[in-house]
Amino acid sequence: MIFSPELLEDLWNGEKSICLFIFDGRFYWVLDYKYNFTLDAEKDYAAYLKRGDITKEQYVQACRDFRGGVLRLTSDNFLQYVSWLETGVLLREDFDGIFDIEGCDVKVLFEKIEDYYVSGEGLESESYYYAGQVVARLPMFYVNFDRKIYLHMDAGRFHEDLVYPGWHAKCLDFSFLIPDAERYWMKFGDFWKFRFLQ
Image 1: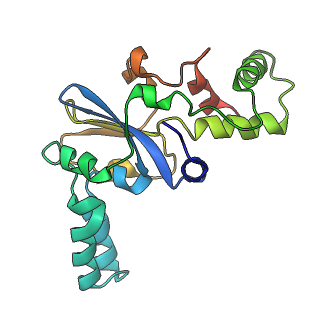
Image 2 (image 1 turned 90 degrees about the vertical axis):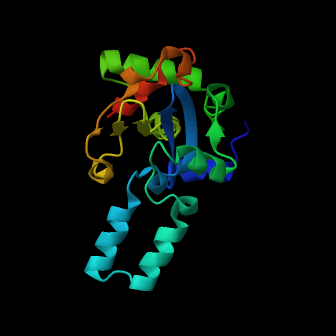
């Protein structure tokens, strides 16, 4: 897949994100607006209505139009949601060029960051910038319908409040749940470690 500059900008500024959905044992990599990874958007809209942020008419329209008519994302309507997307549902192989960053040799960047983790010294501001570009292209959400697990790394947001009873939901590193064969960020090393750069 060719990642357009506009799409990469949306990832960089946090408008869009990547989520791994697991449904019936199959992997669905989805690139979409971050708010579409909310399971129960009805809770949000009901709160807006209660606070007076929206009118009853706006509430009804939002409930009807949100995510192509899928207000409450469940295993029963997940396939409806991904078919509504048209584009943005990817396979692992589709990510092959996602870390091609203009002006940056990511292999050299990886080596610099590994050296920095060992020594604690010598990382210039440009490396932090490019590392941030890499991190923006990693998944931020993990939704496993088969096991009722909802995890995210969108710190400071409380997406876990919008899941259903009986689900395990947290803001937590979920990389350990993703099989190695699906980890598109494993090139010549593990780009996931860029998340922890300070």
